[in-house]
Amino acid sequence: MKKTICFYFQLHQPVLLRRYHFFDIGKRNDYFDEYMNRSTIRRLAERCYLPANRLMLELIERHGGRFKVSYSISGLALEQFELHAPGVIDSFKELAASGHVEFLAETYAHSLSSLSPTGEFEAQVKRHAEKIETLFGQRPVTFRNSSLIYSDEIGERVFNLGYRTMLTEGAKHVLGWKSPNFIYTNATRPELKLLLKNSRLSDNITVHFSNRGWTEYPLTADKYARWLQGEAAEHEVVNLFMNYETFGEDQPADTGIFDFMRHLPDRLFATTDFECLTPREAVKKHQAVAPLHVPYPISWTDEERDVTSWLGNELQSTAFEELYRVQSKVKEANDPGIDETYRRLQASNHFYYMSTKLLSDGDVFTHRSPYESPYEAFINYMNVLSDFLIRLDRI
Image (cartoon, rainbow, N blue to C red):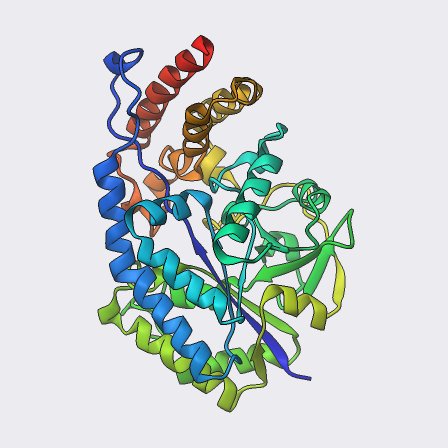
């Protein structure tokens, strides 16, 4: 029986805040930097999304549908594509029409709502599924939480929303001696199947590809196919989960990243025992081998593979608690403008920018923060949130 490889890509872009000062509170509610958001989306569309989508469609057509991919695209990203780069939406519609692409569900705002006991998580997941179905004609059946955040409890909430497949991180401190290259189940709801990211093989592309100091540099399609064949010897499914910005943004075009991906399926199908499947297909083909007990939330971020990048200090905890404290009031307000702002303020990036871990971990994505320091990020966010709460109280 052939082994399975799942290619999954995440797309998310937050709606960035403008510099909002203390003296703006109560006086203006234009919180978002429209120029920066527009220029960011258009730059990424040109460098990454459009050429990467063209490449994926080319690979699907060249291999007669043997090549398959899956995507989760946050609602905030979709809104910004519709506004600033509608060609990206059109290119995803082409991919959807191929019949060999699966679109996954996630939280609409790529939020941390699964870590809150409020009903915001459930509301966002439903809203996102409706958006995907409207745009691409698919009702998602596989769930992927923001940054692969998962725990037993979160899995049960996902199960209660009707999903039977979920993606998460193959965290070493959870797996122990087990391999991520099998299908597992939620510890309390065995009907929920779990696909785990193979971090080593995924990171070899997303993090190490252009690193000339890496002992395996340069990475070629032949070399990578040999690694995959080695993984296949005693395993069933290898999940390569990546940020889509790997192609053209994090790894610029001149590194050869597009050529690498263009040739990889050729080598996979010619020299390995792998076939490409989407998550929904993978769980139908392979049986789960065991439950996976995850008492505390894990993610695909940082060495710790936990949630401390977003909620690891008092700044982040304060902002998080203030934001979700008013969820019920937002729901009662039933105001479209309030709802939109509330969703935008939930993007996990806002909390990531406040992480003091960035000062010591040498995180490869530090450059993505628009702030000089985590403290500046916190102050700016809380200024905006303070004005938002004033508006909410008035309503």
